[in-house]
Figure (cartoon, one colour):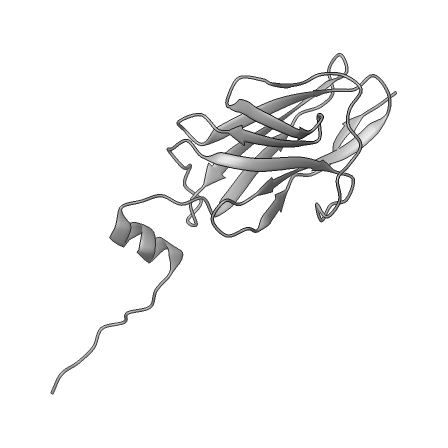
Length: 141
């Protein structure tokens, strides 16, 4: 009599079979404001939570909602890469961008605002389409 082993398919099993790493999670670190600048760092992660060791193109935007379902107000100062990643294009000035991570799946961006502004950084997962939203970054007056 033939027996069958468990053939459950999970994202982790697909990664194991393909030998590929696919971003399923985003780890955010939102810094505190210093001289009008708030840095937001993103680490792409596999389904198991391991850091993704590859460069990935991402669509990102600022939102005033914790759901990420709007396009927030642009900061009045610069929006620039901190240490990791590259801004490829800015679709809507300082709010909606195409970026790439570094080769370790890391991205960090500095947002400069001289007034009061509260925003979340939204990252669209390039594989699943899911929206990953940071905690609020707060610029005080």
